Amino acid sequence: MTKVTKIQAQKRKGRYNIYLDGTYAFPVGESTLIEFRLMKDVELTDEEINKIKDRENVNKAYGDAVNYLSYQLRTIKEMKDYLYKKEYESPIIYDVLERLEKLHYLDDEAYAQSFINTQLNTSANGPKIIKQKMFQKGVPESIIQMKMDEIDQDILLENATEFAKKQIHKNRRASFRQQLTKLRQSLYSKGFSPEIINQTMDNIDLEKDEDEESENLRKMIDKVQHRYDNPSKLIKYLMGKGYSYDSIKKALQSDD
Image (cartoon, rainbow, N blue to C red):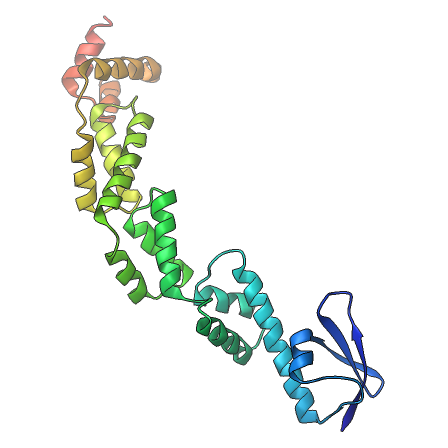
């Protein structure tokens, strides 16, 4: 048997140093102190000491986990990875995970719903990007699919349309054909489905402005003409930018 000869409060609130037989043995938190009724002159067996140390490790891991959760919601996988990074052993980690799940502090289904709502309200990301991000966070695929199926398609269409309008303004100096191509590519890269992209294009209903097209072509020619000593190469370049052969020829002839 070993006797507790001193319990010394640390500078850190709620933490204590335990001395056994006059020698410092280990630190504990207040919850561990209370749980095992540690006080001066209490005698402990080796088995009891090991239980105290194990409980203290669990409580410390739990405290770290709660602190990690205080910043934002986490998935079970994120929490598990975090605790492994803190070098806690597997039995302790699974004990903490179980406790957090019972208290609903860890809930992948609730996490997925919150994550989707945030993405829909604060970003232009479509379903594919949202799914990819959740997968990287460790949300189980079954939960991802279930929650993605619940998304209101009207919200997706609205988000895609708003994003498309910004892209149109961004690419307003490009040819009409290139504007359409870039718009579809941007929507696709944001993770929207072909169906939503087609509906978005219908909503935007872009029409070619011939005067604007001619002006953009004229500016493009002025910008790059000095690079080409061969007119055919210049024409090929401009066609690659989405301008028609006839429009290019007409613009070049007007310079002669």
